[in-house]
Length: 81
Image (cartoon, rainbow, N blue to C red):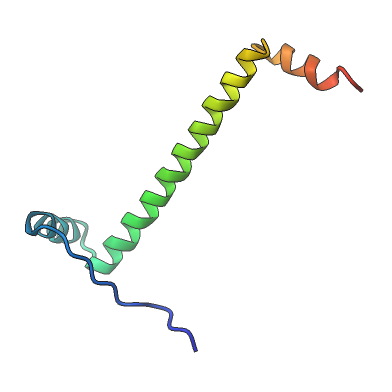
């Protein structure tokens, strides 16, 4: 049977370890809880950055095609219907 939790060992500078301990204490969480939350927030940030990159790409492509307003988008969508 697969284990639900896996122990993880990470090496960090002592200053960072001390900050991590302080953060856990300030949040009234154990280190495992804090680590899970940090990974979740990191994952969310990566997804947001990916979305923004796609949004910038789409905006650049739209500018190249001179699609600048919602009316331009509608005209493009309905032109072949």
